[in-house]
Length: 433
Ligand code: S3P
Image 1 (tube, rainbow, N blue to C red):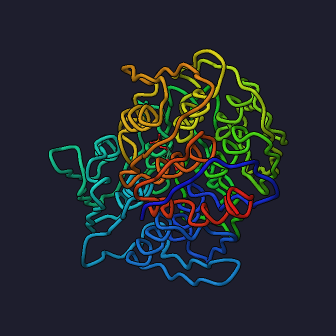
Image 2 (image 1 turned 120 degrees about the vertical axis):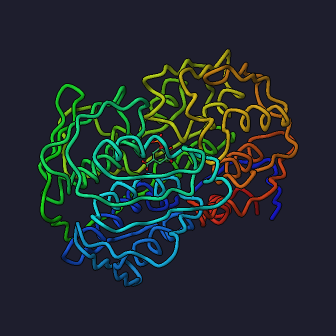
């Protein structure tokens, strides 16, 4: 589906951020791993997280969907059923990387995980490696890509140092550690989102973080009861960007998750002098079993270029394309460094952002590990292809609202992967009449 987004006059009003995708995936998985029913309030009903519900059902969990909540009745930590066919993760990279952690511990049972064309281009050796070290047997196509075959074993704990600051890989090891013998430790090269750690703590697991080292002790069961999913800061980031860029805007986004490990983008926007008010969580090493939320109050204003350093990258990984867009409107240069991980997302997001924004009139170039944009006081407009990547589709839409001539997005339906109400929310904010 192609859709044109013309220049907007000013966005006003309030929307509620859609539920968090990362947290919804984790809640459904932990629900399936628990022995008692888990209620999940405000589960995200989008393509990616629907794949997770189908996956846990294939593994023996029962899922009831009600208006305001879902209930997952799990199989217990070591009792996943062996489905008779491959599990289809669709477009969901988080499901593809986290689920093998649980499956690796299903002694004597085997599983195959597969997904769409984009998933088949994304590496899974990064999870196969630690799970193999814990005693499971895994096989990936060409040693690196899905389909991924997992043969569950009785696992042993490991001390693991992550090669990349990836919350998905970290979470995979933590899930496997729950059913492994002993205490597992994981060291990450830089902080990344910590939703898994917080949810495990809430589920009664002995998990600590000290001096950058995570330790998790194996357990017999998870005791989770209720999970409330906050709004997704990565989805809200598109509305934030529209509010900051479209002259005359003043808008409110309700119920946004403001866990420090997810608000890197908001810190970057503020550094660029963008006006975003909200009660963001402070940095702390101590793990807490909650996910803080805040409303965000956003207004249009002039921006300055900035440099995003490598240690900030995992804290804003999914929002970096928006930093490039903001850079087009900022005074001076905006540079992102240490973001080579963007090449293995739903699409190669370095190439996609650079080619896409250049086609709309941006002065932007790719670097080996990111991009550099020189602000030209805005964008002309044109056409951008989402290439099946939800975040590229939404980036094109926001670029159109802020552009001089408008943007045609090819493949706007991709937004349904994480934010099905995106176009509707823009309309509610008065992006067009
Ligand atoms: C996610 C972690 C990030 C992010 C992805 C969701 C998660 O990936 O890009 O959209 O839910 O853990 P990496 O941890 O692989 O960087």
